[in-house]
Image (tube, rainbow, N blue to C red):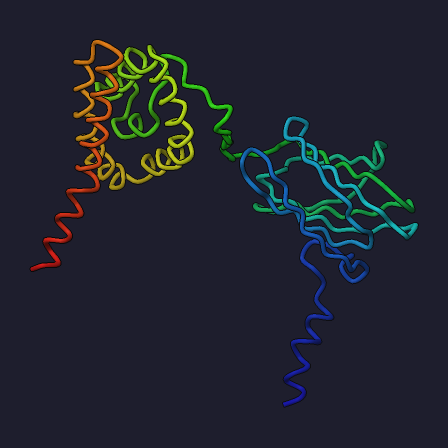
Length: 270
């Protein structure tokens, strides 16, 4: 039985890593969270030096790692997701061109670092591709949000009805541009609304395009609301717009919250 226990351990000692040959000579494991374009990517470094900091420049397709080493000979293995940085790599050590080795598969690039230098050093890994297939998520800060410029569309409504030229999307655009953005209360409302709306609408719109059934559910849900908004056409003055707007808010709360609650309570009583 003891022999059976030692067989897996023996295999681990014999089999070399898939990509590199330095793992037995390095010991410090560092996981770097690279935040860019609204996403977080994990870069893994196994090394005999200490990682002090890191930077990523998406425009230059450059990953910079700042290190401190107590040894003259520095060894490291860097695993980089290919959707963060890929293609053909070039390297710089302290701004001097260096030759390093790397291998890759469909998901990752595996860079083997081997260079000399005690103390602080800067490593630049530069690719030819960056953020391939990654959709940028724009983070909107509420204090800096301004209303959309006239002519913009509604993400969810456009995904629901298939085009920015659909009557429903045109209705929403005309309500925003022709009514709300013509008054200061309307502009204030749109600023507050955008802070909430754009925190989730891009994700929902993407899911609608990928899932027809989900899209039909959204269409069934927002159609009554869009229909009710046609009442805003009767607002001629700012006070009338505020009054009708408050009525529509109460009406839609009743439709989307009150009515389902009444139905659920009725079912429970049966």
